[in-house]
Image (cartoon, rainbow, N blue to C red; front, side, top):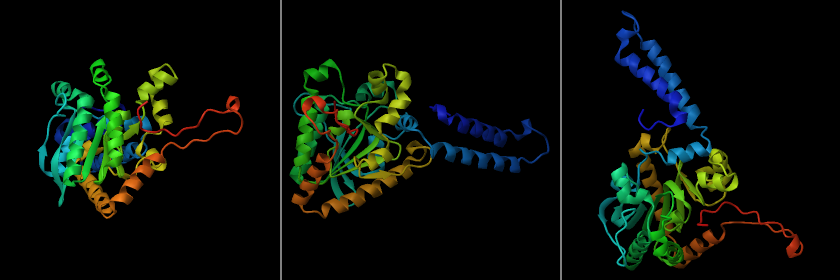
Length: 339
């Protein structure tokens, strides 16, 4: 199996044995039917697949979210939306290919769709900057959102990035300011906004297009203030603790839903979105349409108040009684914002 993850090895071994038995029965024994043995292996394969994928650890879900065959934003745009017309440039500095966006139709609705885009191979990843946008990417996204606001179009954002680009050039062009402006402006846009985390939701790079009326997340996606590797390096000074960090960060879809940081989980096929891209896209489309209908039914003022209250409610903490010298450190929930 190409791009096999470590925990998928038992599945791959059974699948290879099954394929060998089906394609070359003469190698095993002459004149014997292998139908019964094939059925036994098929049942064992299905049981093994269910046992593995229904009991994934947080770190294993992060690995699935990063799977190189996982569908990216443009894959979903192709399968969910129609009449997509991509728009380019931030009208200030340059075109950022890590951020895509344009006019499209979602069912009967005209919308503006925006998303972060990774590459499939080395050449495309260089063009897409591995899905990590520069400041001009976020300024392009804001330009498109303001255009949607002007024409009264709902905004759909697809989030799949390890984070905004952290290089010197991005700092020189004020990446933090670009993201901060997006956060402020997205709270004020009067049109409906739906964000969907389809893979990686890394820090402020994800939140820069993630302030929305509804935030959806695919079952095996994650949303985090920092990568598990970065967290392990900071807390334990050793990336060998990455799996422990992934569990501690509470970054999986179920954890985020319980913390009320996302609004709904979009189911994926057993084995991940890449095993059935069409089915995953159909699930995501139905969820987008359902939430869009609910948001459109709200008056603008109520919509803006709910959006503001939604994000103000993130990050509960407790304080101990006493003077400042006796205060305990706040106990914060993990919040997907840039450090």
